[in-house]
Length: 372
Image (cartoon, rainbow, N blue to C red; front, side):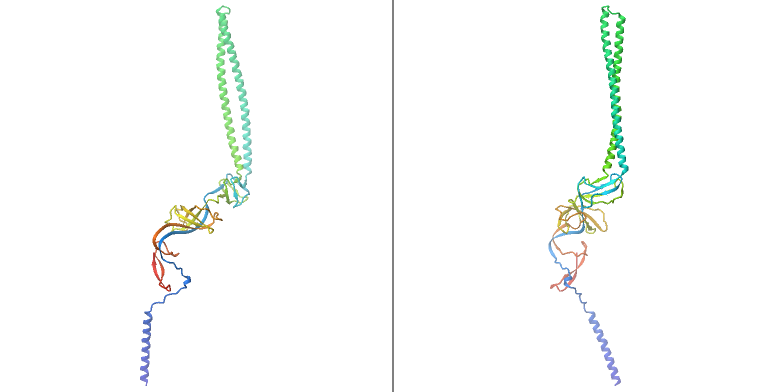
């Protein structure tokens, strides 16, 4: 009986081992079960044949085509800010006022110096005119004496022929006439020199007046520039200074833009920007409308992995379009005819191989395939 039990246990153990081996072999030959997903979470697209439009997209902002920075032309302290960002301004609109007491005093001194120089010019002109008149009077007197002496000499010469006047008297008359002739020539030259000298002195004084006048006008304009004006029509976008702040010449005090002339600056990933060219068609979505445009500039430098592309807008701007508004841009690279195409997933790179799942007939299963 004991031998029978032992044989039975051995047979049962061997049978169990064989069963485990057979089950293991059977399970190892089974294919793994495919994972399942909810159909609502799967993005499905259909492969189509026909024309295909290659595009790149990016986000960006609207920026003004014309930006005018209003600089300080003189040193001063910000006294008052009269306009706030968003205000519609004209060329003569005063944006803010500066104060500079030293400049005001310098302008007053320059004006006083100019008035003094003008008075000196007027006084010198009167003096020179008087001296010139005196010289003209002397010249006229000498000329009159010369004409009288010349007539006397001619008369004495006629009388001397008839023996009515002594020869010595006739010679004296002639000598006096010749002497007065020489004096007349000298006085005439002196008159010419006096006139030229007067013109030269007046020119020197006039140059001084002109120099002081230019300095006075400069000081006066600097005082006027303490009232900072927009200088162009547009919208005040920024005033980067505060009341009480000291500014130096050249410092930017305000920025004025023309809101009706905007362009879009779109940031495109550097891997997608290599085929972008100037003149390509683009569309800008302002979230309140879409505006057509064309690529007008491509930034040659890459910043933070993106390339900035300027798009010139060609259509009317939608309502609410303003500088710094966030927009989305789409640029058309090329149109391909008669090609097979399917929507590219976000992780797919251009000209690269990606793995997609192709639906089997019936749509209940899908198989992974490689797609370029």
